[in-house]
Image: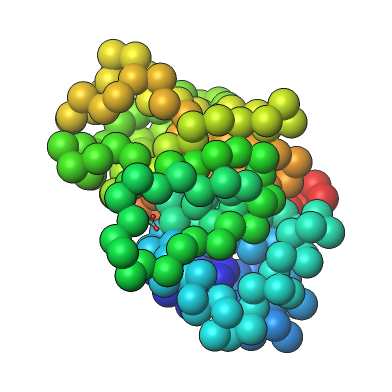
Length: 206
Ligand code: GLN
């Protein structure tokens, strides 16, 4: 669990409940000991700065390039992208430097002001027993994916089950090899660890 910033505790709990031995990662030595890494939600610009400050950016880039399984939620999804699109960067916001672990273009804060935060029930490939309740908080969406990327979930056309009507058909969960990313926060739905279990299975399988 990358533990520099953001929603760390909920992910640790969900990972433990999924049968993983979860621990926080803040130093390169800690990164070297894990078989997979979760990148939490939070603020991707801040995380970029902290990854540099903690001298973790380059070691993590190397692990990901070598095929380490990873799961990024929200800001974590942004960090795993190949390209980050952002129409609304404040002048002095340092840019996000993504790892390019998934061949995709991700748009930060994509759902905009009206639906800054919303919830929806989504069909999620890899989780078969019913829809996944998804919590979106200033979430990104995926604009474009490469041929090797599997789309795991999109926001349904009718906004099925959502309290707010979100733009339809947007890709919000993807997988490339052992790396997954969700625009939403499965760690915030306590008592439902299906997405984390799917990730833990991916780590074991690799
Ligand atoms: N908007 C944030 C970013 O782009 C992500 C928000 C979140 O992780 N909940 O980094």
